[in-house]
Length: 99
Image (cartoon, rainbow, N blue to C red; front, top):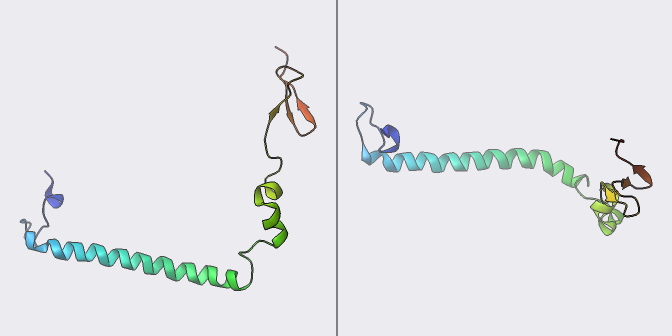
């Protein structure tokens, strides 16, 4: 059946419901330990980057927007309405191969 999920097991393998609080406490302690681990390493890595100014984009980049500056063109493909079945990227026309 459910074994460990139905109850907390004692040392002899029998069900020991009085151990439920201990099991919950261990899980809560694990949550705090993981949060402390992540916080420590994040601070160790990101604090020097923050104080050196490497985590902030320059004012021009923020003013223009990252999408406009970093991800240009805004669309990968646009449909050219004058020629059926033809797509364009910027000024380069890409036509499908003849069938």
